[in-house]
Length: 50
Image (cartoon, rainbow, N blue to C red):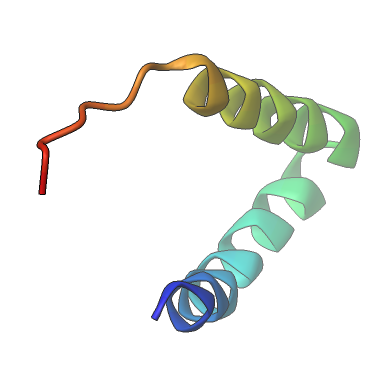
């Protein structure tokens, strides 16, 4: 299920970020993605015990 979710998000979001990279430079888009990924990785995840 997780790989399918990843592939679906990639199909939907890749054209969006490509448009951003075309309007502004690619470097800020890449750096923003890295910052968002590191922020999401550092956030503690809630364990619901299920």
